[in-house]
Image (cartoon, rainbow, N blue to C red; front, side, top):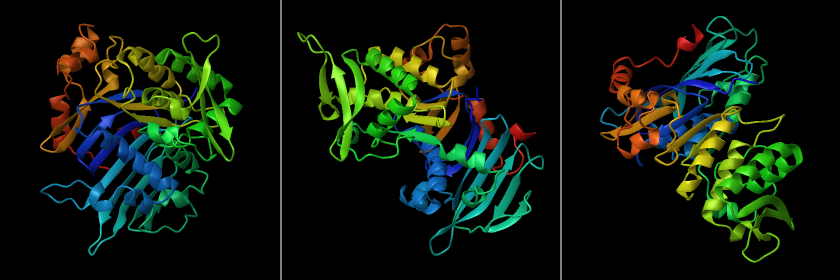
Amino acid sequence: MKNPAFLTRVVLRNYKSIGNCDVRLQPLTYLVGANGSGKSNFLDALHLVRDALSSSLDNALNERGGLAEVRRRSSGHPTHFGIRLEFALPDGTPGYYAFNIGALKGGGYEVQTEECAIAGLGKGPFYKVERGKTTATSETTFPAVTADRLALVSVSGLTAFRPLFDALTSMGFYNLNPKLMRELQKPQDGRLLKPVGENIASVIGHLERTAPAQMAVIQEYLQTVVPMVHGVERKPIGPMETLEFRQEVAGANHPWRFFAQSMSDGTLRALGVLTALFQGNRDYAPTLVGIEEPETALHPAASAALREALTRASEHTQIIVTSHSPDLLDDRALSAESLLAVVSEGGETRIASIDEASRAAMRDHLFSAGELLRLNQLAPDPAELAAQAQHQSDLFGEGEGER
């Protein structure tokens, strides 16, 4: 089985509300913090990487309102933002990928520096590009690059870098929208669920054809989370498609059938979350799934089943979840290492492991993470935050994971 922790470390600089962030990720990571603390911005930084590689950097920035909306606003007026991802590829090979995007005078932007090294700097394939010029590479031939695009898109044509490109473009990020899931949908590529669930009927159809075992898992958890629902399947309607649910109705001998337009927000969101978690098959699976507040619109009693589904899915795909739900975290078996606490201080998002007192309380099974959250005791480790501020890790060069 592949190593499920694809991204092992994430370093961010000046991304939206995040001034400086340097955190480790687990196979299952919970980002915990109040509304408005900046949890979503962490996931969005990873989502931007996926979008910039799948379409273009220009599209990825424009979808977020342009560079001025992406880079952090502060009294220091940073003119750039940067991202460093340390990873382990599906075969276990470590490496890092990092870039800096800076503003140009008179408008526009450029990729100031972009680096990639697989299996450690100088030990395997690597390249470094500065302002559209290749300054170092292990490859005898290297494609033309420009300052307004990420070089990894062009470099993905080289065998050495294709696994990283595929892994980064196979990440999925979700903030599900029941309204769009309810509407009739055009048949689409159903291999990867789209961010708000706008192709969920195609994904369910694809799973029915290619991964019936995964579909059975989704059906099983859906009935646990929403007991009245006995199943779901893709249903074509002329040139369009939708979902058809089987639901128990009092007095009826057999379940009644309802299209998605008749289902509640909670049911549709639950199906969307479960589909995001278990959408993989033998030929294709997301390397990482990030989900915004999966507990939204669900009854608190469903939290245990949802938590079990997250844990089960993380055995095969790396999962990152944002949450501020004590019910979802109310499990004393939950590891303190799986939690990252998120706070906003003076408008700046700070992210770190939970503090030592909370870790000790969880280690000794005195409190669950949910109980600590109810007591407002789930805070980032001040020593780790101080270290992040004092020793701002370089985005480039050999990191801890490659030494």
